[in-house]
Length: 244
Picture 1 (cartoon, rainbow, N blue to C red):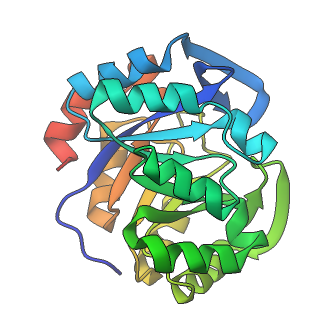
Picture 2: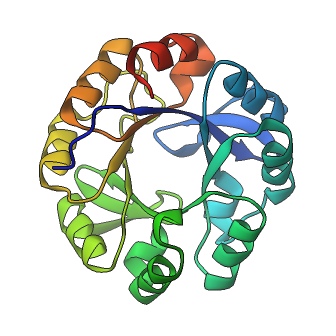
Picture 3: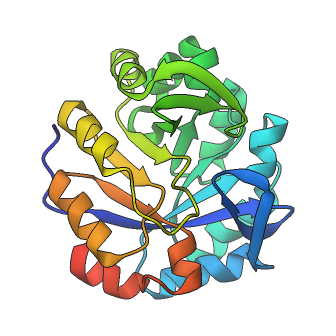
C-alpha cells in the first residue's frame, strides 16, 4: 500500500460532440448533457479550488484517437488547470503530441491490454505523465470505451502494469459510474492494499462520506463527475475537508 496523508479531489468533464456530458454506467445511449460548453464547466471547477481536471474524450474512445482536442486545448488555455486526458490514446505519436499541447497526464486504457510495449515505452519516456486506467465490470477489465469485456482481472493488470513501469492508476467500477450510489469499496480496499503505485478512484462517489473513506483507505485522488453536476457534492467543501 502507498501511504497518503492528502487526497486530490478531481472534477470530471466528459466530452461528447463538443459538449459536457455524463453517461450512466458508460452507456452511450444513456447520456445527460450538463453543459453545452465544457470550458464553462472547467472554469467553474477551477473557481471552486480544483487543481486537476479529469477529461475523457468519449468520441475519441470510440474512434480510437482523440476527437475533441480543440475543446481540450481551449480548456488548457483558459482555465489554468492541470489536465489528465483519456479516450482513444493508442499510438505513440498521439501521446507525444498531446503532451506537447499542454496535457499534463495521459491516461491509457485499451493500450494496456492490446499494446503492452507501447505502455512500457511511454512510461520509460514520460514517467509520471503516463497513467493506466483500470476500468472494470464485475472485477474484469473492459476496453474500447467500455464496450468490450476481457477476462483480465483488476489486480492482475495492476501487477503487470507496475512491471511495465506504470507509476499511477485510475480505477473505475463501470457499474457504479454515473449512478450516484457508492464506490466499490471492497475492490478499492483490495487494490489499495496491494498496489505499489498511487491509485486515483472514480465511479459512484456521491457523498462526502465516500471521500472520507477513500482518504482513509489511502487513495491518492478521487474523481467526481455526476455528483458535482447534480449538486450532491459541493466541490469547494470537498476540497476543504478532504483535499490537498
